[in-house]
Image (tube, rainbow, N blue to C red; front, side):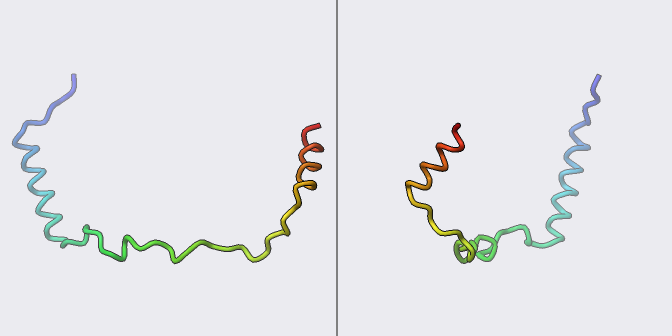
Length: 65
């Protein structure tokens, strides 16, 4: 059978926990710095040239054999 803690013990534990969080300060709130996104997308420098439709079709036919 599971053991259920009495309500006084639970209330005491919750009170102690809330007192500990108040002593640490209000550091849990998010600031504007926490919500700033990265400055922009990353663009690769060494991208291969675009292939033509004909080359892509040939490659697709070879792979689908």
